[in-house]
Image 1 (spheres, rainbow, N blue to C red):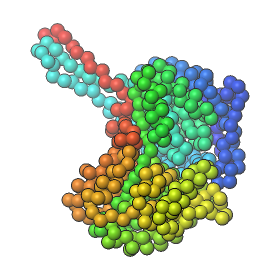
Image 2 (image 1 turned 45 degrees about the vertical axis):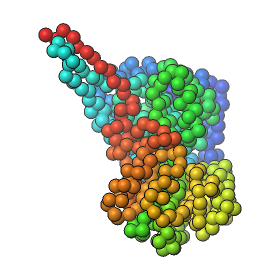
Image 3 (image 1 turned 30 degrees about the horizontal axis):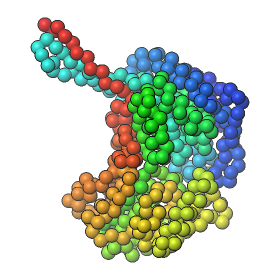
Image 4 (image 1 turned 90 degrees about the horizontal axis):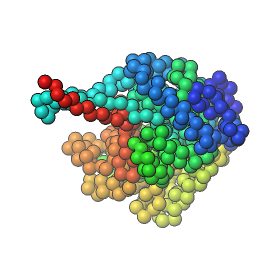
Length: 483
């Protein structure tokens, strides 16, 4: 159970904590053992419409605040998140499962977006453009786009909210958040701190619900919502994009991935193993930028595989609240079933099992870190996002071959590679069809850089100086008779 003043179980709409109109609630469970940790108000499209109306009313006030005033309020929110980082992380671990150290890292990472965009609020610059005739002057300003619908996933239930909400609020927009029904408590805890920070009523609203499709339709169809920002599966992202078309909303999509991790023959093998462990097993492999297909040059495959098995053997599994745990539970049983099915398909088609491929005897919700060798493109694991603690090894012979194999996917979110030849580093980095590329590192997420993908991994960017551009619209003003 969770004992915390930040534990809220009702919706946050217009600055108030509200039950569902029909009194419905749903259970939130700990993925480690499926124990119920809270029951939360289960809202519908009717309450979502009210939240949108509250956000639209608040927008008329919030957009009029000076950039400095919005910045000060956002800094208050940032400070409160940092002060309560361990408390927020504990809530996150209990409802989501990731180890507490990772959860604390997520809270700090998420808070960093609030700090960053608190400053960027004061840097939304326009332009003065030379006029097209002597009596004309041209100016361009940037204005907040309006009410934003933010739909966030369960795997990063805190950071995915701040990464969207912070730039929206900094730009002068207001937000209606629909968190995952698997992890609503982290969202509601952030709303409580937003309330304490002095974010005005209606500026930030949270809609917990099990009726995701109905609430999503209301957010996409409601003409008062001007922007949709979604992180989740490609299938759902395409649906939201279609639903947003009739009202021609601005849309940002951060969708699925199928990240290649390439190790060339001149790579530092120890560093490559370390980087692979970092990117693959974080959050039990349940991240959109996890390495998914690991390509290793055939000349170093044996050495790399041996060192990788030794590193995997040191990983500790267990309750995320326990000290020293590296891998916690999968989010739910169907996630385990999907991973297991991908592994069995690969083995049936000729892959060799090196480690794992089972759940823990002590914790059936934890899938053991798994290593497969002799993986080939005809196996489902090659083309599907794994979203679990599984490494499929694929050998390659040439640079051209591995770039073609890496790009042989409709997804284009993240890619990684290790090598020392600087000329090849440039060729490969430019040749990979992905929005983000890690070169000799497995850790690429930072507030300072634009996060996002290409192809069916979505469009738009979050974080960095580019992130706030998703929440503003340009207005061109032509001044005549200036003579």
